[in-house]
Image (cartoon, rainbow, N blue to C red):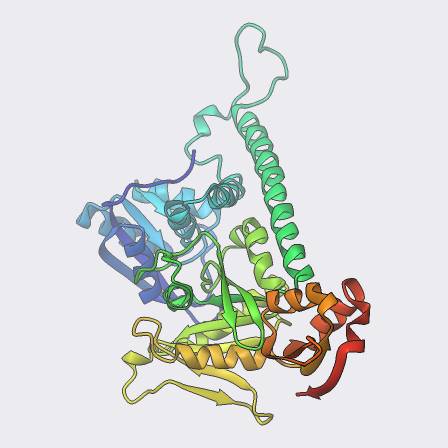
Length: 432
């Protein structure tokens, strides 16, 4: 049912330059997408238009040029660097006698190849079903009739209506299963919030080096490669940040300009980690001359998934490819880090990144000196468990004098839920 093609096929690419900046796409990015899908590029047809043609997307003359290129290169598929309507795809296929795939369909197919976990496969299938539900008529026109035969006469339903009904049922089934996954993730987030464990989410344009950075920080062994959408399935790992303690780091799917809305909707459960994070590490490829545009595209997607208000720390990656660039922290007028320069591949600047995380997550910290009686060993143990103890001494009476650094919110939570009397043991305090 799906428009799936096998690796090794030969393609003709079509790229149109529009005068409208919002309609423009990047040809180099399309070539990277096609390579990531395992397709060989035989030729590229380029053109310029003010707006798409309603019948062929391109003009009639350009459509004939595409058809000639298909015959010349003996191509198996035409891939457009743009979104096509179902009617435009059908018209082009009839003219060129060749399979036509739009940019959205290409991205969906790459996602289908990359998905490894059960959840990831469900999300991709949901996006594919939503996409194909508007394109069922293609290749099925011979079935656009009512069923006949014994027991099937009368009003009945057409084959296409049956297919649409089956697709709707499958979409409902997958949506229900993904809602269960979403509830499980929500339970995990609530338990982390109760334990005052902050979450940091890696976001960025695809192929910016997020997974390489994730592996460098966590030793997680996540698959990383120099290709678009190498990472699809979300991964969570625990790291230790000084003055903050245990912190959850989440690696997420990379974004891309004009990310299909079906994908955004399908990956809602996964992207929830981004919405609920205390801090976003926005990783970008500093060696890419389009990094400024890529940053804007990621910000647009963050707004679309309601994560535009989450605090951001920029991470300029791949500085090993920039002449004269060294690891450093850029600070704002208040002295807080807003960007860190690193190379995930070479392991440069990782300690500076942890320093920036400490400063950004460790805001509103308080330092207490507590004198805890021997009978309150449970409180002492809990403070050690939270990794907030900086120093410990013992008095002649056997009391523990602990110096702790803890977030103000975490201390208030401890007072409210566990030890309301803990304030009685404070002998000095120092607020950052």
